[in-house]
Length: 207
Image (cartoon, rainbow, N blue to C red; front, side, top):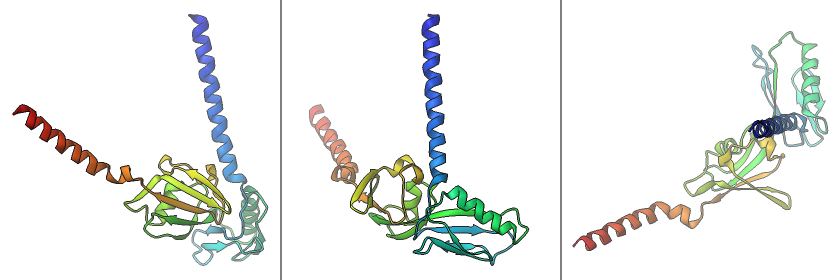
């Protein structure tokens, strides 16, 4: 009995260790990605509205920011870019609350209310990306999403609230919400019909 308990505890400890490692890897991936042309950086500077804004990454992988000018961001980990930009601003203004948020540009298509191009945060979820397009239509299925990247297609499920960094999403990707299948679209009607038929049969039998 003691051996069995120790073995069980060992398996639980191993499972916890694997879970922590997986979360750590996810968080690391969210910080190690690089911005690309078409992405953007949201700059938030408290008490400095003229400096606050969203600034796109140009085709040469540079971003032009207020006060500090053009900064190369392509091909560099986000942690490194973030630290360099904050250091540059600290030399210009005395404001400890500056925040930088990386944004990916994606295209949301399919069974959504407002298909189009949107900026999303890497730490967001697929469902939040769909929400930017005013959500899925009545025919849309969050469980059935295709991510199109060039000639490749990936399946995804927005109902599971996966972070975009876990998918992972790249700038220019198309998030395509498919329609629900025939049974899903007509399930309420089928249930109502079956209940009605059951009631009719029960009434007939009782007579």
